[in-house]
Image (tube, rainbow, N blue to C red; front, side):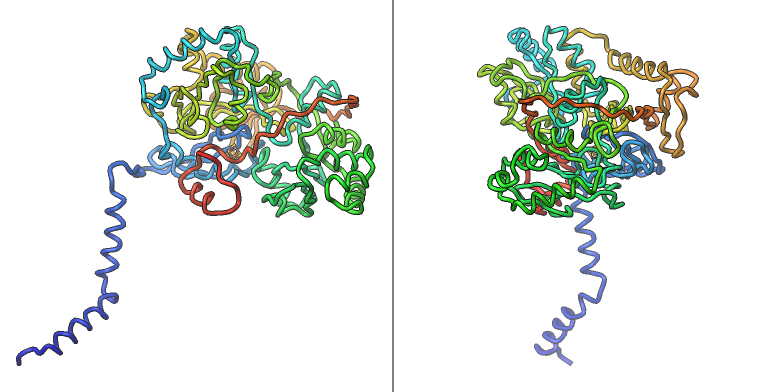
Length: 537
Ligand code: SF4
């Protein structure tokens, strides 16, 4: 029988209808997905034995403990360390993708001079010439103070006759500095979040990765404090707070003064846009549901803490053993006064940094990515990314006890990148092992003091420092991801004298949650959500 046109059409239609029920389209889809991933520039995870390593996060000063899952020795996943003395089993969202950062598309592997790729020797010669020109008007802006690298930055400045070792105040940090000054305490003050029953936050992003997120969020999850957020815009923290006081921008000091009783409530109501009844109600809540901790960055906020007797008491600002080396805040540097500024990563926004440079000022940015300040600096030195270099971290500003941890290099750094301290060391002619020697001295000092204990993340146990035979053993334990924690200071109520016209606290520079770049997955979520405004990269 000869096939007709109708037979052909029926057969074709049948084939089209039946095709999705065969494996052919699904196999083609699968294969094309695999083929499009097989480009030579796409990193492929190695195959091999799984293992777990412990280290410290170096993306911000919080220094949270990381549990890193590795395959064939390469990090493939990050999780928090339960019972870690600093991060208390928590991490911020950024850390979960931190192992992807070395492959970020904006990764820098060669120095840049005015936008042109150059060799490290050329970059070094250019910086040496600028150093000579700048004389003593040179400064270093440290993104994470308290490290061994920070000690070397200070030394470099001293050798160049400069005292301008700079840091940037994190939101809510300056109140602790003011209270320390007013009380004359030789020790820095930590923030006792765990024992606070009420937290009144003036614009501090308490629930948005602020301070040590593990500490804050554990206390929040346990509902151990009520949060009253004062914000003039809708922020993630304001949205989650028990009460949000929507006030006029820039009127925080008036509200703090009214709550402290140093300004008439009606006058504050007029300025802030809040009702007098609401201000009185908040004042009553602070007085009755204590300890009530007040966070913010204005002398009036520090004075309110004094009024609430929060200094040296549980649930307030309490002494931490140890001494923090004084650093100048970037905001305190006179505008247009810096001839040469070395800056790490995205330590401060460009508009703030730009103001401090003289018209002939030169910016040297140490960055692993072509992003943030590196977009504006005439000289960019590529540095190892997170997990690619040995680094260390001291306690974050809110900590109640001093701590120290070491981050190991879990990945090899690409050729052509150099740590900031090594670059400065070459300029200054230091020995190659200067960093290792300085760090070993630091561990030896902890061992010699025989104070505190070492947390072992693998075993989840702690060992007293006095039980370590020598400093080398302590160093070994730290390199395995251990975290040293000092003994807590004895509780001591501090008497504060509030000056009649207190100096203005350093301005807040922004959240400590975001970095200039995020891991690719986090970038997508970050940009597609309306959680936070996207920063310039
Ligand atoms: S808060 Fe900072 S140190 Fe902690 S996990 Fe996040 S980026 Fe790392």
